[in-house]
Image (tube, rainbow, N blue to C red; front, side, top):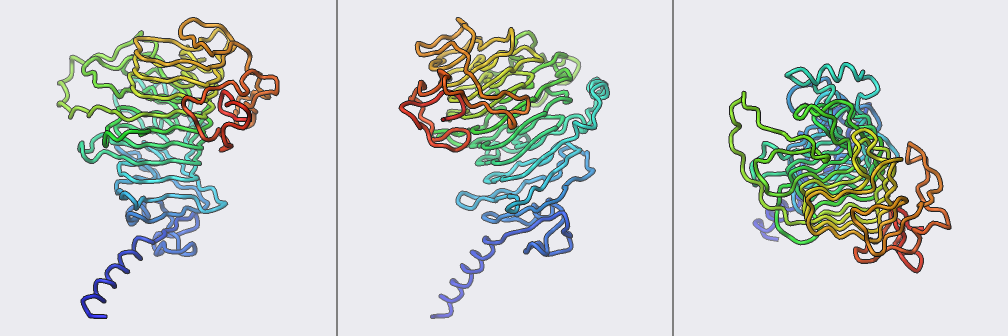
Length: 453
């Protein structure tokens, strides 16, 4: 081999080797270690974040991960570096281990980079130690305390240049709970997947009207066809707001799952789903500098195979959002704080709502239809008649769940053998699996709701 060829080969080998690196973090580690083996693991997640490169993996062992930083943008793990197409960065729990992130600042994990996967992590907030009265008092102060507003996992494109917004982000098999702010939040991002997660008891104490799983102001990375946002196979429950949203002075949101604002309307101010409050500019403050206009978001979103129950806002809804398929979800007894319907589109366009089981709380509403266009509603099962949106193949009957529990992971939202939800769904938007990963269909037709039996 000639010298020049050998040099090229050596450089290629070194480059590939560098991108095969696995980093280790552990509750028994030390940041003076090299982080390259389980025995020489780092102690802090941020140490790995400062070193990891595209194509590499960070394996996280048992331990409690936290810090005392409450500054602007504070997080236990703050990720600014991006992976690459074909060389994603993966953050994953070591097999059989359950690392736990406990934030007290603005977020447990904050991500402003692209091409990241998060797998098997737990983010547990401070709800257990927060007094509601103290949170309400803090919400009346000019400067917010992050202790009452901590988000669990926050994918944040705000402040990034238009061509640097985060995209291609996946969170799976994670547990996000008891965060006083939002659970899993994505703002000004694209190509976003949340799957097989448990998201509960979030948004109780924040002043910003958060929810369990939220996307807001999707920022188009490209106009490629297909699903850009996928929220599937998640258990979402008891997310609610107990502190008024500061901009309107009323309780708002606390939804299980919401897709929020992808349209291009400007200057109208956000409104809550009940349309009884509008955010108006503060005339006592200088007008903010003009922001770059968001590119039109033409991708589709899929919300499928989720169970969303006992949330203070809706089980699932869209607000000023386009191009959404809401398929084979189960919602139960939502809206107990702010009175929202169970599952609905609001001021939205091109929304398909099909094969869902929708069970409102006593005196609650199945759905609503405020200033929507092109909503396709059919093959849904709900126990009380309604005339807002009615499909030819809707079924009005008790779904007959096997066992309803307020901790929905301990209950059983499968259907009894005599339920009318069996084998009566549509294949118009054909999902391959149910919430457990079981193949659809199993019988002569598709089941309605999150489970295929």
